[in-house]
Structure formats: structure tokens, C-alpha cells
Length: 197
Image 1 (cartoon, helix red, strand yellow):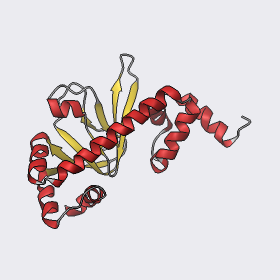
Image 2 (cartoon, one colour; image 1 turned 30 degrees about the horizontal axis):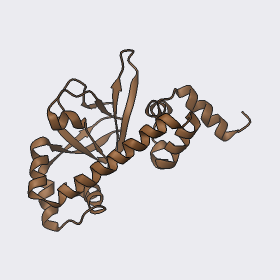
Image 3 (cartoon, helix red, strand yellow; image 1 turned 180 degrees about the vertical axis):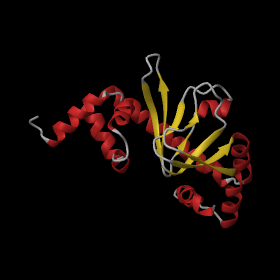
């Protein structure tokens, strides 16, 4: 069981120090869940009961429009958190679907245990604050990119920011995340291989 937490502890310790006692206490707040590829963690309309840390695998959160098209909000892989955070914090119905792109192992933190971990392991308050700051900065950058970059630039920035993850994602999912069509991504990739194409 403790092996499952190695990635979590490494992630936390990049931002704040942890004692062995704090690690033991942190383990007690989580429960483990395994998902098969395409299995849902959360469906829109349900209340999000957990924030989830990806120990192994790959997840996506997304909105589905009235035409049935997915609009991907976030990818989460080893070392990332995923949730419909508004639903988790306020108890509203989730607007996001979250499912597994690959077979995935998650560490789940309930709302009650989230509050307890902040109170009982004070360094975790700082850890989550750093996460939220980083998340806000990333969302700002993504919004600016969506409004100022052309398709080629968006794709190039994605590959630069996430070189390893781009190899694990089908082209249509990358396209959805970037707000592009799969055909556009195909055209960009062909042009990257042969600039005269």
C-alpha cells in the first residue's frame, strides 16, 4: 500500500517538507481506487465526492455539448490531481465528466478527509495553496493561448509543455483539449514532417 503513495509523497515534497509521522497520517486519509480504461470516476450531474491523485495511469475531465462533442478541460497523469472542484467544494452537481484514458490507480481524498488533512497536517495547507496558485497561473496561460495563438502554435506549445504525455494520447483527444479538429492536428503533423506538404 505504501508504494502507491511514493508518487504522492514525491509530489508533496517538491513543494513542502514532510516528516515520517506526517506521511503515516497522510496515508490514513486516502482510499485507493482502480479504474479500467473508459471507466468513469465522475459523471456530470452527480456530486463530486473526492479530489483524486493519479498514482498510475491517465485521466481526462471534459464537458459534453448538446451535439455530443467532448470538450476536454484537463488531462491528469502520474503526479496530477483531478476533480470537479466546484462540485467538490460546494456540493453542487458536477458539470464535468471524468474518466480513464488508460487503466488508472487513484488515491481518493473525501471532502471530510480533505478538511481533516488541512487541520491535522498543517504543512498540507501550504501544499494545496501552492497547487491552487499553479493551477490558476496555468488556466490563465491556457486562456491567453486559446485567444492569441493559431492552431500550429497551440499544438507546438502542447508538445513542448507535455512531451511525454503527447505520446500516450490519441490525436482526437489532443485536438479536443486544444479546441481543434482531429483533421487540423493531422494537417499540422503532416506539415511538421514535410514543410512543403
